[in-house]
Length: 384
DNA sequence: AATACAGACAACCGCCACTAA
DNA sequence: ATTAGTGGCGGTTGTCTGTAT
Image (cartoon, rainbow, N blue to C red; front, side, top):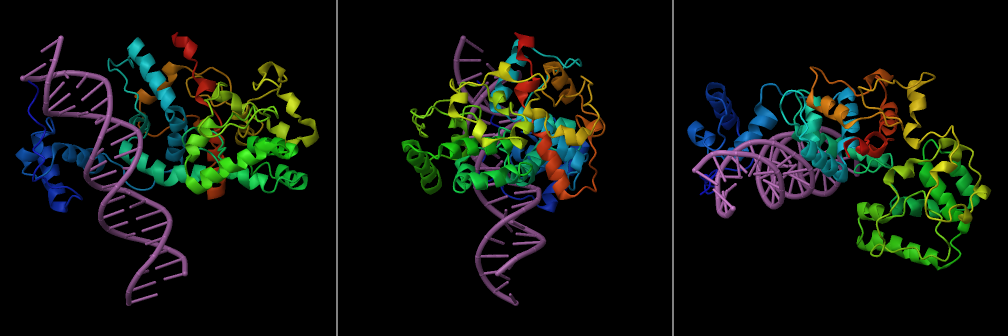
């Protein structure tokens, strides 16, 4: 036999809590604590499910909850942590690793690695639900406006973007886009040029446009699905005799997602459409060894304007946003499991923006925050 | 002033891991 | 060893409020 049921769901009130109910719940918990949520509503005289009481207390009534707008520093922390914890695959990997290693945070408590709660642990006074809502209503939309996928934290490559560019894909228009590289995603620019340079002289164009129409008209493929199925940006130059895969037949790219960041902004700034030929990419794989020594992953670009002439901080106890791998799983855990008394941006010494910064400045900065990837930082080999 | 729409956020739902019985 | 309740999570929905037309 298991335990007694949590609550008898019949006759229990649902919906918004009244001030009277709040008062009863607060009064009861202040006097008795909240050891058992199952029996709490009955003992307190509330016609609510224990689960509902727990949610109301943890998300709203708890005395240590900080209300009000999120500060810029808090938003920055959320974005950074979400970029590391937002990927379900990475989450599962980390959970698996932590399971194997039975990771301990040093206090004897096994670290729980849930995304929103982990972020909330870095933001005292903020609840996971509050952060989740803020993400969905504010940050997510902001990222979408900036052309960044809020799920993968990589540049959006949905077909709507491509369509917009391809519809104006004359060389002249492309040159204009290149001049706007600060505004348009450089990877997208590059792909747009590659595609436009071929002028889609074969049937691929028709297939591709059909795919767009499918996405737009029938919404068969959501943006996220399309992104998941789109070939990585590093292999935009499909051999001309190769069919453009359709939404339903595409396979998951076998190129690590981090590779799509391996462009230099200079590639775009100095980009010459004539220099890019389909034959440059014969194997559908990017050859990382072909990059010059001064190559800097895209994940680093943008930080130039943050750090100015100063090099990025090298403190390995904080998260590194550059392409180097001096990032450890343990450092993530220790940061997450040790909430400071005040929200500490993960690389706060790089911040030059202030709360008085304009929205554009903040958006620009936030976009820079996103230009790094889990794989750039998380050295899984450390745990193998 | 009335209506429609969008944004913000509280609350619910379903799922899952853990664990008491 | 098995069963089923509990707590906690992410995703989603519902409701309220503010703004535009």
